[in-house]
Length: 148
Image (cartoon, rainbow, N blue to C red; front, side, top):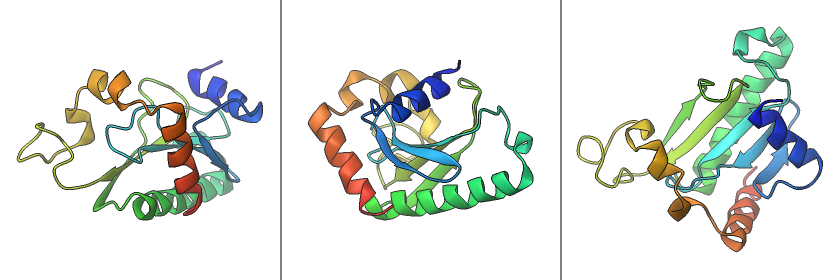
């Protein structure tokens, strides 16, 4: 099993505190690291490694739902800009990274504090400093549910 499949299994067991909502084609979860407050993932229910491996109807619905999720992230976390990525190099299971962005959120990285999220070292983005404690995580999840 892959890491994302493992996390989905925890959602099904009611044991994933990052879980926000189940949609038709995927699961919405708050990201482990909150360097960019509101960082969210949309995990495909189906284990495929590439978007083009989904059945056409499922793929179209998945893209539509991702758009709905990104709009909710933008509203819930007052994003000035959204960064949306489907990578899968580390975890080969189709999933979207949804980053709400605000001016100056790079904290010293990039050109004038602007640039792609991946200019911030992964070790920093995922460090314990940016992992919300249980009560903060619950607050993030509940706040986001109001918009989704």
